Length: 333
Ligand code: NAI
Image (cartoon, rainbow, N blue to C red; front, side):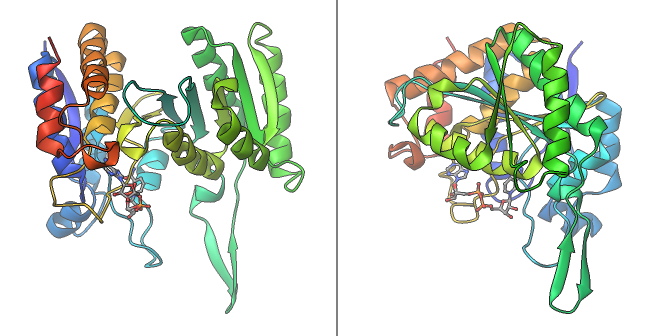
């Protein structure tokens, strides 16, 4: 029986890359039935709400979703849809595999790491208030429960994928209570996995080390804000935001999405790179057990990049969303 998957195109370049992703998955023979739902600007137009309950209920019903990016207007008291969705559905683990791809011109040729980011608290808890005019507080929430489950997730991922090390990234010298708690929990969990090497590093030091030699790192685990920043940094190591897929995983639900945002500077021009969403769809296919189709899609993406036919401008090509999609479909074999 075909697996129902909630599909949220989002806004900006979201609908454009969604069309491309659907074309590739259909050609690859993915056995999914899309249940289209709205979030972002189209949902504001239709329901007056960027993340309507109808959409959250569809994800609760079908358990798996693939989502395009959604705009968060800055400084308008509008809470990020992405943060709200991750918190409401308790999608506690953001998982972003970052690996060197063939044919992409970058200074490194041996990146193969996974960024595992705590997705529900930290500075993204949404608890900000004005103390007095001119003074604002943002609360950085850290709980033992959330620290433990994200670090355990990282170690379990390392074990499943046969990875050698887990590195915990923090700033416990400046935030001894919050990151201090996270660090002590990370050490406790690490003791349960003696066969996986455990490392600790300050976040600023990690940024420099990644720029110098990203091949030293395997699984990286960290709190929410550091993870948001480092995900984009790591995307840059392998060729940019158009290439890196992601998953938001909870105990009950999983929502797959590219690392990139709505790219307002290129939205509507038909030039967005759909690979990040296509690779996110491949992660979704793995999650629902369609492993062969997932591998076929990943292989076709790598072949397309290797041949450098039809590539979009972010990859140094002269093509557009349609030409790269056509090339990927033709490489499905
Ligand atoms: P962005 O990721 O949208 O864009 C950053 C740069 O990367 C832009 O120059 C853009 O053209 C380029 N880019 C991104 N994806 C690309 C693709 N697939 N192909 C080619 N080029 C691509 O980040 P930005 O500008 O910080 O955010 C724009 C909006 O997106 C904001 O409202 C933000 O809140 C939202 N956003 C949403 C996310 C989500 O829904 N998961 C994640 C990140 C940002």
